[in-house]
Amino acid sequence: MKPDQLPLAMRWPAQQRFDTFFAGDNGATLDLVQRAATDAAAPWVFVSGAAASGKTHLLIAACAAATAAGRRAQYLSLRNLSGGAPDSIRALGGSDLLALDDLDAITGRREAEHALFDLYNRGKAETHTFLFAASRAPAQLGIGLPDLVSRLSACAQAPLKPLDDAARSEVLRERAAARGIELDDAALAWLFARTQRDLGSLTALLDRLDRESLAAKRRVTIPFLRQVLGS
Image 1 (cartoon, rainbow, N blue to C red):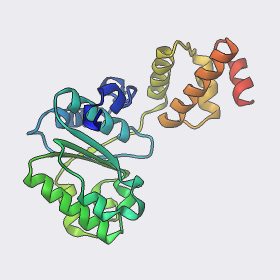
Image 2: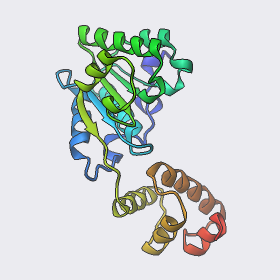
Image 3: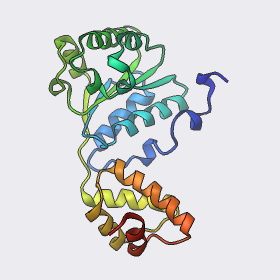
Image 4: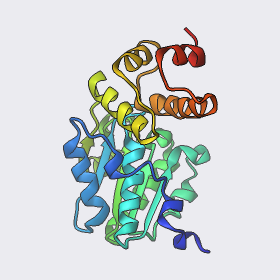
């Protein structure tokens, strides 16, 4: 089976979909990315936000939605390209939607920046849709190529605001419930006081608790959390 023939569930992780993204105050950003996923006439989008704020989730969700709509989609984290790999960047393309994550990884790398500039221009000429993601807006990234900063700044800017503790609690409770785990207010408060509170870390912790509770055949209570995570 060729890569472009893989079933949707095998190509894009099922937990990273638009309907599992908790938008909070980021409804406008979610709307921009959803439009870009399925509408060829939608503007290109530049998503910015801190680590674990949901950038990768949105880009992969967009690829899944594009594929479901019959569009060809690609996702790539530039962090996975050693040294920026200019030739690898230039070789990208041929998809209706191209989602490029972790642009921070190539800032200050002259050849890689020029390669991304060339890819951007080719994408415009071939009427593809691009999604970009980085920790900060283009002008604050430290990109050395002014023309690339200008091109990226011309995209619809979609900042991701961090969720507050109430929103994080709601997300964690919903994701726990999807696994058959009940987290009451006391257990959530105990976790939030003793663990990292970004969604990436909390979701990874929830995966661990799911495994541990199944193995021990116990509910996730404060005594169980103390046993698993330490006091």
